[in-house]
Each structure stands twice: as C-alpha cells, then as structure tokens.
Image (tube, rainbow, N blue to C red; front, top):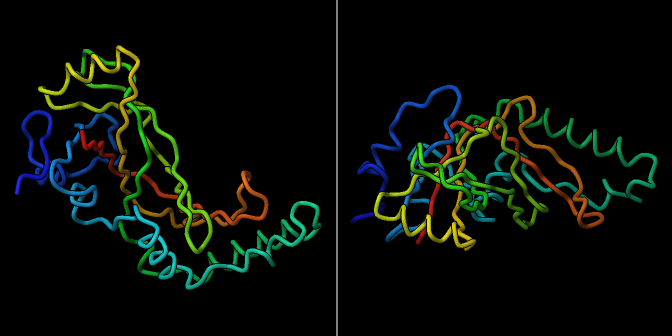
Length: 219
C-alpha cells in the first residue's frame, strides 16, 4: 500500500530509520499523507499521544488518577495556601512516578503549523507553529517542547513546490501538522498548573525534550 510521497524520492521507512543527532534538525521533508492517518507516518518506536484517549491512558500509567482540581484550587490566587497546594501536588506526583517505565518511552505529539516564506536555498518553506490544547478527563493537556529547533523548514516534494509557492505568495493559508518526537525530561516530566484562560481549569503540561520533527499534510 502506497502511504507517503516524500521529497527527494525517499521512502517513509528510510526516513524513520535514520540515526538521529543529539540536536534535531528543523529542516525536514513535508510528508504527504495519501491513504493513511498521521500515526502511520510516525517513527515505529514511538508512542503516539495525538488523541485524547491515548493521552489519558498515558497519564493513567504515569500518575494513576487525576488530581482533585477543585480542592487544589480552593479560592484560587486569593487563597493564601493555593500556591503551596499546587507545589505539593507537583512534588508528590514527581516522587510517585520515579522509576515508572513510561517515563523512558519515546512519545510523539502534534502541533498545528502553517507554511510561511519560501527559502530558495533549501527549496522549502519556513514553518510557524503553535501549541495545541487537548481537553481530557484529566483536565486540559498542553505539551511543552524543549529543544525545538529554531529554524523550522518543510521541504515539499518537487511536484508540489510551485503550487505551494503560489498559494503562499497569494496570501493563502497553508496548514500542516508538525509531529514532534522525544522523551519526557526526568527532572520535570509533567507540570500541573491551572489554565489562565479559564478560572479553576486544571492544566497538565508534559515536558518533552525533542529528538525528531516531522511535517505532515493531507493535501
């Protein structure tokens, strides 16, 4: 089954088997999904954390059950013990998950991206990205990317380069998915907090040190 068309004629499996350097590169092919979902395009040795149910199962393995957000929040920032309860929640959960094998797994999460300026030298497009929030039964989950390359460039297959250049030049919005693979940082791993956007809403932030970046599109 033909799955992906890659820039430069590379196959998906050749791309995924490349030995990674210590610092990930932000210049990568734009993988075109043709007959399968995002998860089929990810490295084989990673755990996809893309859908809410998969994220919930991962948190179940790491931290067993969601916190009592209402009790931790109390009266919010007007409560003199609010910060101490939040600090203790993080400290207790850090301690309880020590040695958990799920901490060592490679995981992949996805942020939305958009193609911007064209770079003639590489034949690719600069990529602007932003975080994605997942509503789950644990609360809102928003991944934090540590060590993300500063120069994100998606290189499309040769036959798609000119159509994409025209779209970008005409100011059309070209959206892609940016899949980031890595491991939780042991000393930080998961941060519990409250969302600024909604009072009392629990926010969970897994902190992932990025090892690999992939750009995906269905167009």
